[in-house]
Image (cartoon, rainbow, N blue to C red; front, side, top):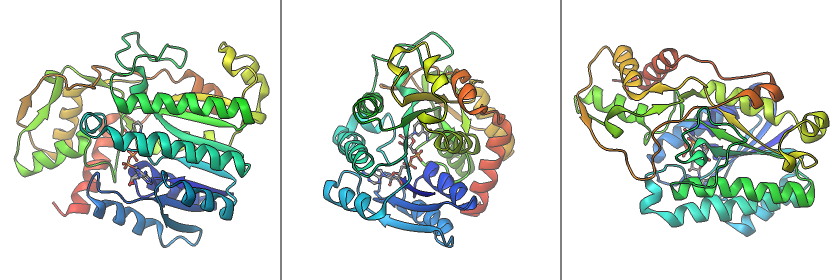
Length: 335
Ligand code: NAD
């Protein structure tokens, strides 16, 4: 199968590309290599993919309409894994336009490319942030998600709405995956695990938001990628009975679906910090701060739908995943 992976130089994109290549798929990896965080890390991820015969890299911005039209027309992708996006909740407070360009204009170009070039399945990254301040736990795909609390979350919910129209109007099979706080080797430098590990090793205090009372459904990267691949391999046509049985009327005859991918085992932020301390063999000095604007106090994924569709639910314990991240971090940075 020939797969377009957007955001291939990113954290999840690199891992997803590696797995697709390992099983023999042809991967065209697209990324604009922006400087939201250290571009050298993105280059290093690409260097891991480059030796695979089935891999080709294209530097392109998903918001570049003409470039995207050309790419889709020339390449003829069977499936698309769309992970390129401006990520991060806090950054969206200062840089709203980056989210509109990459997440809305870019997503439109992806939808149009899939529609006009008969892509068999578009799988794209949504986010647990669409649940906003919902307090009913665990978060289910059937919960109302009309109250995002950051522009980032609003663009992810907008992606789901846009995907629905393309599934409805053109029969384009689309699946949105609501990832829950993904972590692991090659992870993002703007996220807690990376920031905490870096600060603890440098002997600096760590910023613990919401005074440590946060709970997060931390989900290990290999589980995320397993979910992405299992979902990618199925299309709407594969099991019409599933859709007919769905309690959501909007799904009954449209090849559109959305799944949570989370560990369904939320961990208190302080327990997460303890896991990092244990893996590093060092104690952290903590700087307790209030909840940041746009952040939510808790996340918890209900994964029953994902499990019903794929037979899979994430299950890596946080202590194991954190230890694997720390081992990678020490090796990569030589500390
Ligand atoms: P990442 O920032 O490491 O990867 C995204 C990649 O996309 C980057 O390499 C970036 O250069 C590229 N990119 C950004 N804008 C682009 C554009 N306009 N054109 C081309 N390339 C562009 O982030 P990640 O953690 O790997 O996240 C992947 C996807 O999953 C994103 O859509 C993100 O919103 C979503 N997500 C991630 C998490 C998480 O915890 N990591 C949680 C929920 C959702």
